[in-house]
Image 1 (cartoon, one colour):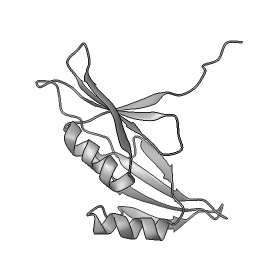
Image 2: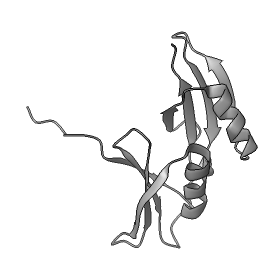
Image 3: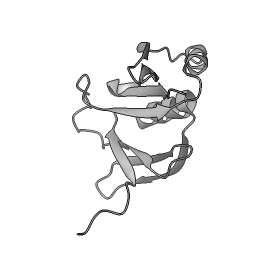
Length: 129
């Protein structure tokens, strides 16, 4: 049976690509790996995550398209952190307060959320030791 080889990236549409890049770089430490304009005129930015091959693709459509309106709890990105309370404190100093949590799960992990531009949720997970 044929299967896919691996996940390469996940695309997220945004209204302001520069604002979103700033959030992901400043709040989470992601790195921009490349930028270009698609054949349809969309601005594309790819962000690398530490210790992962998969990237996040941010896509801002050309002017004149409907703005992005993310439905609550539609999707989220999840990132592992070593020290959730320390990470949350650093986020708050940078102007990115938690929107929910921290909460201990039944597995012993601790989770919390921050909101990215357009309302995308970002989950932070400190795995149980």
